[in-house]
Image (tube, rainbow, N blue to C red; front, side):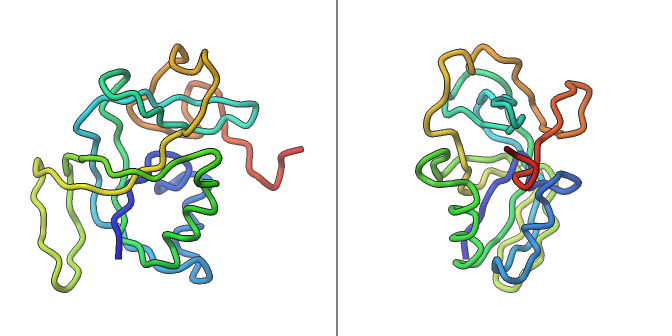
Length: 156
């Protein structure tokens, strides 16, 4: 089992959240809401309005998201879904727990304010202007930025 930090379309209430719980993809269990300990640029880019976390520590915001415990099958699905290593890379990131709800057997309950690690998907390559795009602390496809995510099925 691995921990994965999601900050974009895979979060609760977002367009791809359902993919976290399709049994064909594997198993995922919500553990906690959290935010990165370092600042990173979280931008919305491309003609499909995709959220990208740029691996530029110290810029942007402490990004808010959710930590999930996933099995190997779900981790492989997420790597494929995020097109690792072409579009995204999977790396470890330090996170500050905001609210821990995970109560799984044998798992230590982390308190709000504690630090943990999880995998995060960050952009491997990006256009030179992306770091100058507006940065967000928390992603919402339906936010007032007006950049609603374009589903894969609707892309040309």
